[in-house]
Length: 156
Image 1 (cartoon, rainbow, N blue to C red):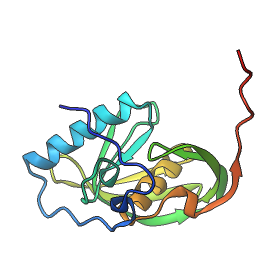
Image 2 (image 1 turned 180 degrees about the vertical axis):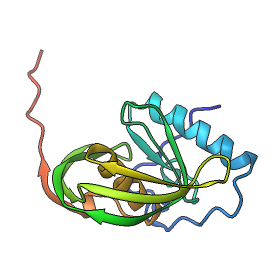
Image 3 (image 1 turned 90 degrees about the horizontal axis):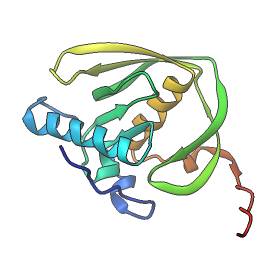
């Protein structure tokens, strides 16, 4: 397991569409584990493979309930709406409000290649949508309603 280099806004890989994973093999499992380590190292709640320079449909999320590993995630149902503040490890020092579904159902493969579904509500729904957007070359700033400008920190 290793910490991978995060790609930042301006890197063209962040704007490309990721390719579907055809087989959950050892390389994909290593990628998932490295992404978990990288996400924790950078104190994120989610990470998509393009953010570490890999154009594969692979996402990891941990909203505080333990890591979730998703291969080829696809939103199959959306309900409600929620406007909340988002940020992104690939877009440092920026945050803003984004409209997302309140509840989503996602179909995906787990790290063993088995098809599963996951229902996300609130923060998990937001994280799922945010990370799946990355797989399609979309950043949260593309959907931002209003940018949140942090107040200037006091000079010491």
